[in-house]
Image (cartoon, rainbow, N blue to C red; front, top):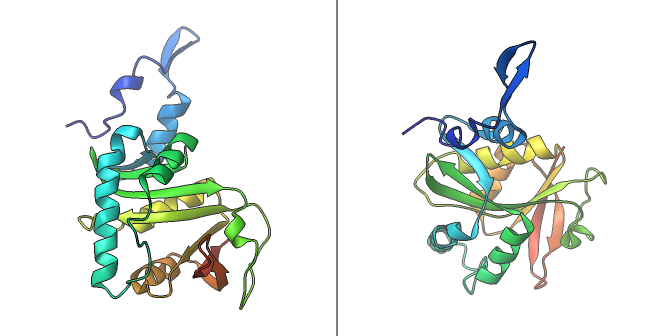
Length: 200
């Protein structure tokens, strides 16, 4: 398999002629994919055809939570398929791939999150525009998924926010390990509390 699977479909798009010499200047989409390609790993916007694999990954994540003492988060088969399809339609859902296999999935949205309008037991570090990471999950087959996700998001917005359940000790560790600071408590749509984090 070629090391850069996305090169072939762009190879005819990037040739430009200057001073009689043909030079290759990657088109915008290719430059974007080359930027995020990391040792056979790359992150792309999810498509509807990815949904069966995405659902498998979320099922694994829910089982992992239950096994590790997190009984409350992502109950009732959260996130629902309807929400994932809406994320895909809006261009907010991403997949983390190694070669052609999806190992991780997450939502990334730049702009104000209504759940973050009120924060208790603390405060945000900055009121500038931020990007939020939601619904982060991996399949358990690969290491470093969250690190790659944060690196990707940080290139698009240096100001990041994320939240997680108080019982999700694994995610809390990963979040602080990636440079986030605990800022307080927010409440999600169903009224349940979450620990809120921010990185500048």
